[in-house]
Length: 113
Length: 114
Image (cartoon, rainbow over all chains, first blue to last red; front, side, top):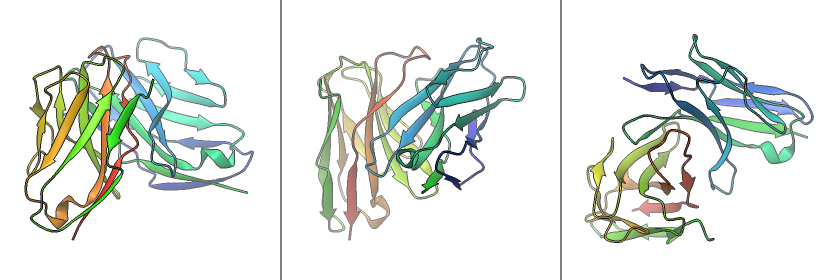
């Protein structure tokens, strides 16, 4: 069965510091993508970053980057120079070939002033 | 583009009442999804659709029905609401099944069943 696990229910980080959110997954597929979504207090889910499994280079979007380790099936999100606006729930997601997305249970991140 | 919109944003029902949640997208997406979000459980898929006129069950379909009569709309119905259906409901859409296509989400509907 395909699964996505986020083992950190809550985390906090000081403003301007760096934080890493963990995600592990399990799949037998060879070519796939992985996503991180952000859900701020407003509830609107937005895409943060995506990673293609075939690409060895880790994806980067401004202050957000991933550490993708395919063999270990690990897909962590690093947020650099954390800002108050980064306070949100973060979900790791895996779109399976059965048309569905599989989401982790989320990590609630609080950025402290 | 409005993206994905949901109606209503909030609703309070009494046990046994019925209601329909409307999801609309203006991006010409084939795939549409209904999720519920409960504390500590992430997003759970209720039903989904891979095109106009099609629907399929997700992981928690009991107590819900859906219809996709038009490509841009995906309706979620509760025939007889129960307190266990108190949740935040999200609609999402996606252009195709290709793995790099992300899902676009609506703003959510907070439903309380008394």
